[in-house]
Length: 211
Image 1 (cartoon, rainbow, N blue to C red):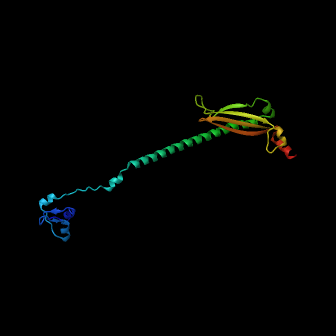
Image 2: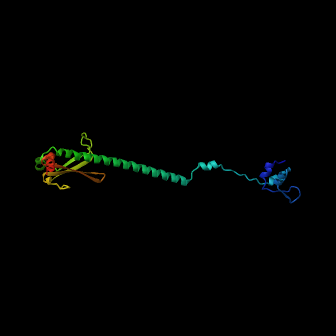
């Protein structure tokens, strides 16, 4: 006796030699009718069984193809390069801001010193240097680096051009302090200008308001 499950698994096989000679019989048909099917050992030996191996779908989902790996590596490289570029740009911008601030400090230092001189000392003495050199960190201890050098100039111009023009321009002088420095192969220049009056600010303002 053969159960219905075994009969259905052999649905595609034809058994010859059962019943009358040269007759073929499908066990599935007999199973649908509810009849029992008797298979002789010789007929069972002639039957061909095919073993089907089912692949688990989860195994194929756990693996990665070569294309996926290449795309992931490319994305990681792009993100890493962008991160390094952003960090280097941020450091460069910060260093540039510090250098500009130091240049402003140097120019302001010399500009503030101008008001300590009178008119004759400003124009007819050599107390004010025309060129000077300062450093990014001038208070460095011996053996330590003072940083990048700043090369400065001081230019004094009498009878400057004012806008709008003023009758007292002949009694005035303009003082321009400029510094230049080089960092990473790029040159930088900053300037600052102030004015000096012969008789002081109070006198020429008082005269201009009364004329």
